[in-house]
Image 1: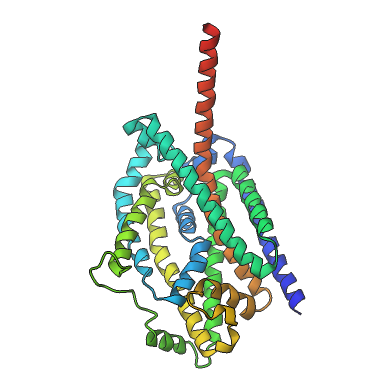
Image 2: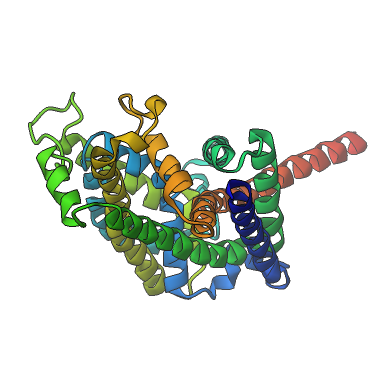
Length: 378
């Protein structure tokens, strides 16, 4: 039964992966120009772009780290989510009008306008290196989860996932990225809701027992409110959230490029607000999963193996719960949701790296041609 069960889940996961690649490749005819590939000629609806920005926020890291945080500690990271509206206000008043009127695609074009070509090159290279490191980290994390759930090797998961995402992002451009993100965000959120339902049904005394156990152990706490900037207090999380979210909306190419994909500044502002407001309940859902997992294994301690009973093992608890408590088919859907979170973050980063690579290669070629011309004239 276990082998047959795993076969069903693997088939669901593989089918989802292939379906996303084919769906993303469908947009290849609309991305055969530079404008179509990079900004979809500014024709995408604000709600779709908003969900795509949300997909950039919610990666496989969130899918695993937030439940782990809720299981190990409390809800102090929720303060990070509450700072998003502050960053959204600044983005709609300043960043979006600036980029829509002063630059075409890249956020770092503005650096060139202000400080010269060296600033744009430095910013572009830094962004590309950071994006590639982030892609590698996400691929590695999702391989850890899928390896334990499917038995496939780490290298196979990383290589196949990377090639698949590269394939449809190269063919379909930003439009493929946005519309696949829409699907993947829906699957991701649906998987989280299914997890909560199964957790609530698994409590002997009903869902109220989750809140009783969590309240007894202060799992809903938002952290310490002491005015201490050294310890990880709520104030530190708030300050970090404001700075990090301003960086995301202000200079991160993943967001700046999406500002150009909507028909107007007003539509771009709507997409930012949609992502900022939607992330608050979604982050709460994932934190609640961790809290519910703590309550579940408090009343079912025998179901938790010894190697997961140590401190700070929350990041591994959710994948273990999926592997052991979900029925056939639903387990495959949840694995697909984790996979969707990873793909949504990877395709966004890849698509935003392409314009910078193209621009740098173009400049290298032009520089080489100029040198060759000078040499021939001499």
